[in-house]
Length: 190
Image (cartoon, rainbow, N blue to C red; front, side, top):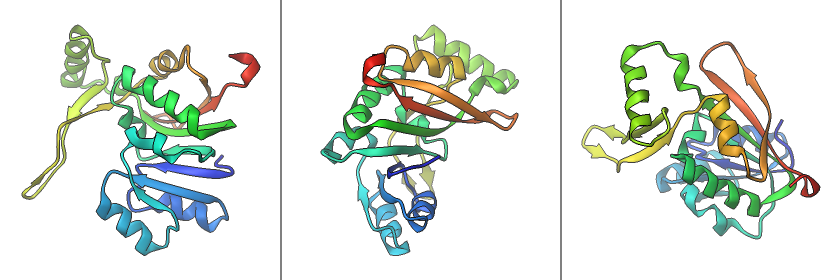
């Protein structure tokens, strides 16, 4: 589904970006980690940059046709409000027929009582049910706390409602994961 000029958000080691680059697409990979970007470049990604998702407006005047958010990177939106802010920024750096291809985990497809209780607590606090707060630890290294967003398809539609984006389709395999193909609305439909 990827087409034209591609932005891989949270590109990690560059697996998806490198695959698309080998297929002839022009790909920019961004990641928060400068070391990850260094690895991407060493593996052959021509355009890799250390940039947080919040900084994507610095990519102007670029016009991307596809934004990839694979590896559950839709979660980087963090919250309803931040998702809406970032979708507006995505609008500014994408072409008129752009797609966002995002891998998402539906948090409600887990019957674990601990998870379900967490969702209820979040909702009482005014957060989305699948909005989690986490940080990464590896040995002696500890990252900062940040919000990560897991959403059902109805919640995704709610996030997109009133924006310049709409859910074109969801690709499912029967589990909790799904791929959302989100398309930019045509000018006259806004």
